[in-house]
Image 1 (cartoon, one colour):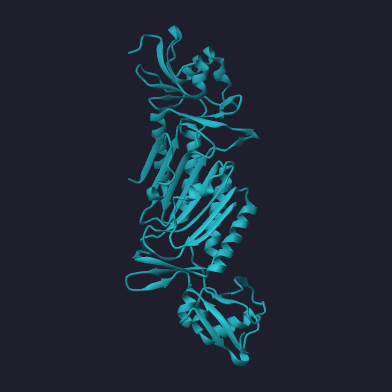
Image 2: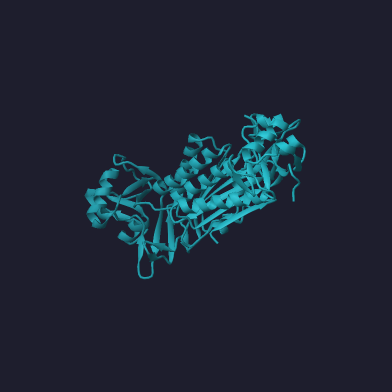
Length: 138
Length: 138
Length: 86
Length: 86
């Protein structure tokens, strides 16, 4: 299988290298998104992720297929966490492996940029005295 | 310490996420270079890496400093393996973490591109009936 | 099966907060929306908060649906406020 | 300390294969090179294989040295053929 698509409670960043490794790949590029402590100088206590899972998995699968069509890739990984995540926790992992490094870098960047635009996952920032659904309002 | 520079016998890809994780980082980008089975349709048995270690560590350190000056990064990792490496083995790991994803992607690409140009490490491709120092001849 | 003028809807993220539940069998009566465009209009009329969002999308059977898509009985219809994964 | 006209050199990668060793106390006699440029010339004269390489660099005390750098006794001088890490 050349793509691994998952929505899980907790992400295991250790597995991703083995999952992307391939005898025809000389390059592996991985992006991990994690919880930052401050947003606009306000301290974030935690993030809460919610998803429309059946649709999100479909959109992630389409995203992997698009990357596999656009670039010559041997493996693609797209994983997202759900539930409450604390500072430094991993919330998303995307990665690709290819014969040469340009392809995996470009594909990896495309995967995270497009995931943020199309996959039905919602993030709520929990501050000390309020909580905000990210991007909901202009 | 915001940079980790190492030349080692065997690379441990599992540690790199923890090493790059930082409370102010929302993005971590990692590139792993690994041994490919075929070069120009010829089967590679193994790669053999040799280094001028004192100088290589100095050059890797300069490279990390240049990236830390060019982009707003919280952590930088540059590691290279030496000795004999087989198909799918990791030979190099570079990575960076930053508040936003653009910086870590650009820095990660810069690290691997520049490492390949400046760091005194030499790679010999071992084929069935011959061996070749990569890039030695035009 | 749905009764006439009635529609089962799924809500996520801030949309869930606006209507106060993640699933709602909404009664529209004679104004029952036939298309995605009509559904958006009906929602904004009933819950003005939807008009304040950065964007509002509708998924039919877990696929993004454009305004002209017609809604059929038994479609799974979901209200998709601005996504913010990653 | 080095004797007059003698120079201790480190060789790596294909440079090591060309001279047959990783370290060599090379005797140049009266032609002893004073600068990086002269050292490159002397090496290419003695080992024509060096002229066939994609590039040839010299490191003095583990730093890349440009052609005009003067060589001093006790400098650590290394012959750097085209690098190919990663």
